[in-house]
Length: 422
Image (tube, rainbow, N blue to C red):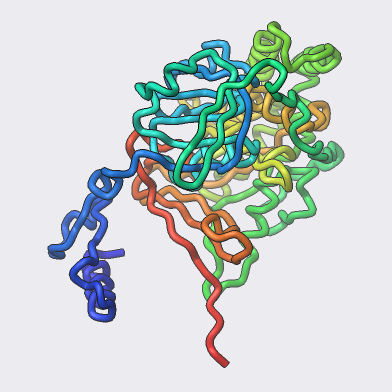
């Protein structure tokens, strides 16, 4: 919104509320900092007295471990650990609970993964130096997250509970490798998840929704189906390694799992992509958009599905058709390879997804190098159970919503269904 619109809205609200002298405008971006409104408050002042934030109110058992945000994937964290992390990590290993020192938005990566996994998760500003937490380092505990407080209780071996790999009902997925077309956005629909993945399928659905004005979707959209991923994996030699990995017993806990997955990704990234496919992709992009940067986005059958959101597990990359500096085939291979990252593999294992059935499709559309805002929309009221609503979390500029910088609190609001009185 423009500054004038913000001022107008604020003044209109102020006229019609009895607490008008206590009404403040939140200064959280460059626009709101330029207004003439006197009653203003910034983000730091707003959250100054808030030190605790429940993110998923439940309980869980685990060994309490302290870890800096940059070391969560290298410190040897295991699924039986409850993690106290200094900051907001970009990746999150499989753990039994999370305590972070950063306040989080309702749709942040940490929040969504914690809720999806059903583990206790909370923010506590002084967690890193908290005496109670420090006194329980490497101890087996039960963490309980409540609305206004949390509880740490030390437990003995007989009371220690952990359900490794069986915490959830198995999420079933389907894979169709017989579809070879590169469908345009208008031809994509939700019945194609087994062919092109969930993200591309829902992208096609979004383009067809009839609002008062048609929903805007990025131009030039089309999808690369599972067929070409599977072909590339088999020809690169990665397919045999995947089969070998999945044939091992208790692979979730194997020390060599990390190195095997890395070799699989290297095989996928180093093998040349089918030349006819790349020529068709680049020609399609040029015909739709010209020789401009486009985004290659992960679209698997193991994300954005019932029972498994897969938030932040896979990679998206950009490329320019017929370019030597930023070739599209390199972007495509990196997206394909991200299917076999350790954190994606572990998350799917945790939810009982059959690894042999996963596949990577790719959604291609125009890129936006200078974004006005980043946002996430969830078709659920996160603040009131059993009440309909759509939760929107958004941040001005190119600051990420799912993995925000330390200290950044995203704007969020609810869209509620309004029914006029009869």
